[in-house]
Image (cartoon, rainbow, N blue to C red; front, side, top):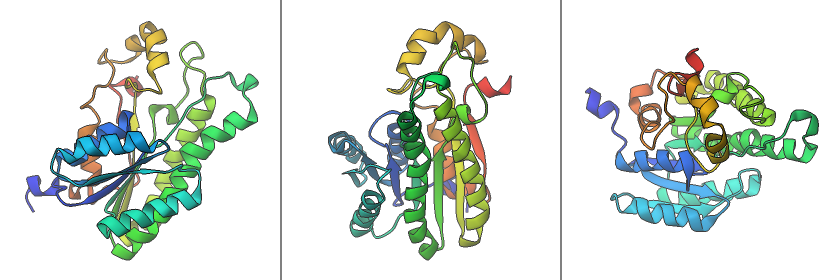
Length: 257
């Protein structure tokens, strides 16, 4: 297999949670550009269907489903619907996530649970359900969305989001352990750890803390709409068949200090 063929994703099927906007939408765009059929799921079905309509213009099949990743029955229904439409699942991207800004000493227990349930439990539920399919297939690619926030802390004057940091650190540990467990099934489990990308989740911090953030990024810029595409395609393709349990950091050098 030549290098071009190693990266070919034509005809494969990818499920992307939280895929209608933000980084999930960027990854969906990359996959569709590479010929992948795409299933987008998030709580707001209309946004998923709109994004799927845009992706179909690239000549691939794309559908949008409503799914709250914290509800096991909705996750299972989404996977059943995907199999009914596409007969298999080759790639899972666990991208759905939320954050909550508050000093830890003031944070409500309900808000802590909300972040952990979406970012960590949601990743577990989708991975467990899709993993059952991939084990039967004897192949699969799972990409968990971590963050540089999962690699360390942040000064309080930049961001107050300890629950988010904790959840992403847990996603990294989950990724590494599951990679060990499912290697025997020919399933590669890896994570992406983006730095600061302008999205609906980060807009407030970037807008109000730009003067503090940019000096900490060696490339002196935030991520753009193309910066995550290559890493996502690599982890989804045969080019990464001997790569598992790894965290690819895409942060302009932020974590290299």
